[in-house]
Image: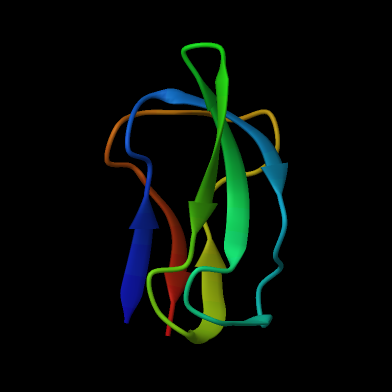
Length: 70
């Protein structure tokens, strides 16, 4: 199991996957806005999206778990 975490505090401006989606390593999962920059967050491993712990518009903290891939 792999967890995608927020590298810094920010706001989720887009969620590009849904629970059950199959993803490959380096697929874009979310877009995080932090310090007036848009930062794509990508899958660190291939697998199936088991859980999404945020939604568009959410504020997240550094190291918060955003997506779980199995």
